[in-house]
Length: 376
Image (cartoon, rainbow, N blue to C red; front, top):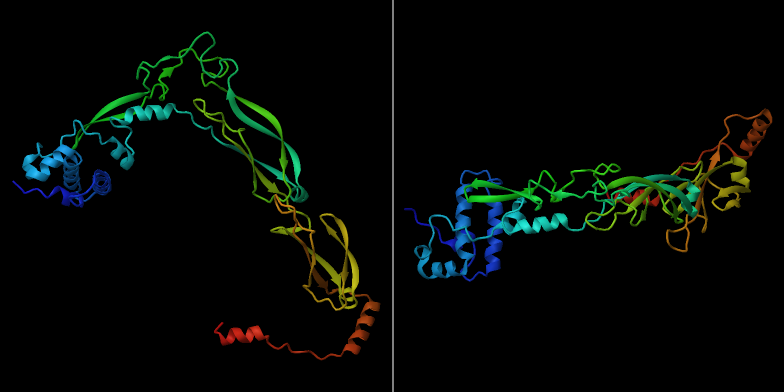
């Protein structure tokens, strides 16, 4: 007969290990060597050995006998006695089995416990200005509600649900499986009543036994200033009704902001591009530009170069939930004419003669030279 390994060595724990350390060691090793997970040839034998060690060391009396007399002092027949051992909490946590022994009452209570209803969502399109300054919108919410005919029971008025003939009201059915660990009882949700413990023999004519009816209601929603594309407005309690007396879910309204004809957004700043002619750029001018607050005057100084950016303070998007705003950034582009009248050509030729025809070679900037010195 082969000599058995020391049970403490099997679990990889010292002889002074506490019951929690024994349990944690078993959890870790059982997860690693369970045959459904580990396909190595010796996984099953290793798993049996782990269970045998745990069966002895987890029992204070058997552990005391083992510590004093060794394997001969423990009453076992090659496998631990699982008759009075409840491994359900361990196996449930490791492998998600549908309920063993002590898990049965827990799983039934969990199924019948109050649960929050599902969330609902919808989308709405708003304009650029509405996103900036806020607005109110009327929306429609379609959700399930308790059937007014049966009060949510699903049974025709004057009747009531009856005890399920399959599970006899428990909401569960048991199935015995033979495994290398012995007989194990697996508890599953009853397929006849779906775990409710009752069946409806005479369904309500309005909701057809569901206990729910669809209803569409209108509601006015306030959209705050400063929202952006993709933001959501949460409406508490307007989702699906709760289960077993649980709270209703929420309704989420997702915002889609329509593009503006000429404004763009960068954070809380508004961007605007304007074109001016070469005379305005060279001589300067005062132009009128649009802003979110209406038209504004913008002074173009003489010698303005293409790409010049002007900042208009506090003319941007309001910061969400704060008393401040971004800026408006105006980028000036200098238009080069492609078609000139004879008079314009003459004027440009005259201007060109006074300015000379020499070109100026731009020297590389200090930053460019520094990049070269640092290797790019």
